[in-house]
Amino acid sequence: MSLLDVVQTNLEHFHFWTHVNILDDFVIQGYPKESLTKNTAQDTLEFVYPAHISQNLSLSDIEGIFNRIDRLLGVRPKRIVIGVVTDDGSVVYYFAHEGLIKPSKV
Amino acid sequence: MNKLPISRNEGLIFDIQTIKNLRLLGIVGYLSGTLPLSTQQNNFLGVPLRLLFEELLYVVVHHSEYYIVPDDVMFQGLYASLTNNDLQQIQFQAKMSQLRTNGKKIPDSAMIYNTEKEPVFHEIKNTSSHLPNVNTWNDHFNQPEVQTKLLFQLLQSRPNLSHSLADYLIFSHLRKNGYFITAGLRFGGKFVAYPGDPLRYHSHLIVKPVYNGEKIELKKLVNGGRLATAVKKVYVIAGLTNKIDVDGVEPQLELDPKEFITSLEASPVKTFSFEWAGFG
Image 1 (tube, rainbow over the protein chains, first blue to last red):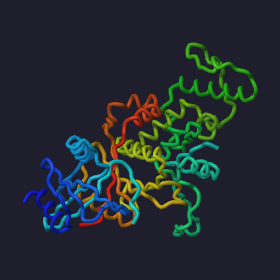
Image 2 (image 1 turned 135 degrees about the horizontal axis):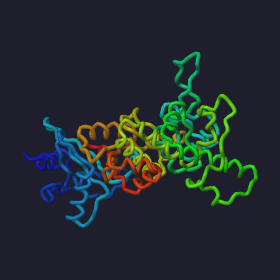
Image 3 (image 1 turned 90 degrees about the vertical axis):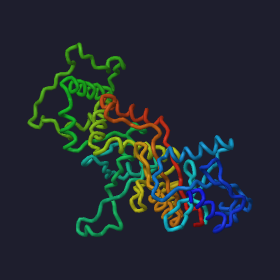
Image 4 (image 1 turned 90 degrees about the horizontal axis):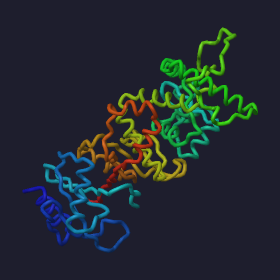
């Protein structure tokens, strides 16, 4: 199973995301069961970039993900989700925002 | 008082008024003085205030009213780097500004030292303490030419100048965005950034510089992101879009370090903020 498949399966069947599909063979889009942004009820489309824990990313690699989504859809997301895959089957998810942000309210 | 005394290539400030003024500029530093009789007491520290290298550089570059005052070692380095002509020029400037402060009307054109002419002032030494030292030179340090040399010396003292400059540019980027910055080792980063004065706010960012377009291990991102989220912060990786080549620019740096650093600040700093997404 490719990284994309692992993350897609995890999102669909473990976190119950809906309308999950792979975009241009590099990023996964879908709607979370509950909004990931605190204090907002509306559903927002999230983009998940799958990566293996052993990988290294440079700043321009991360910028490249934003650029590619921008080119593909004509909208530049404020943030993306990086789905980090390990060999033991666990997947962890981290937000990557472009620029500096405030910590989200808990 | 706008003096920034240097001790072993580090800013070390004893003057309370200067500390207050720097605080208003968003320069926090850290108090490091303890009691001579109980040096283990390290909860309530007092003067001197130590400045991070980035803080020192920021003040010198952005607030020209502040100037570096070297310690003995640094002064010896400065004195050794001066040519005869430099020396005459420095003495000329000092004498002229002294005359000006004494009320003599001297046109600006006369303030420029002319190397073609014979020196206007001949110094006659009548004391045994005429060997140059920090004290006899106290009036000369605020001259721009002397400051240029001192700043270059400070930059040369850095073990890795390219990293130091990258750190500085990230610091400057944060400062320009209104953040107050302190050292970040406590949270595993280089800097911790506060949205205002650290006495009033909790910090928002743990900042990790990435040098020369290097890659960062995802494991470190997971580490940093998880820790930052647990303490209500954000893990920020920051780096320069353009690579700094320090070797090629040495002459430029020596000629006018302030100008060079200001020109570097024009090139953008790229930042990404990481947080745990709240699931998985």
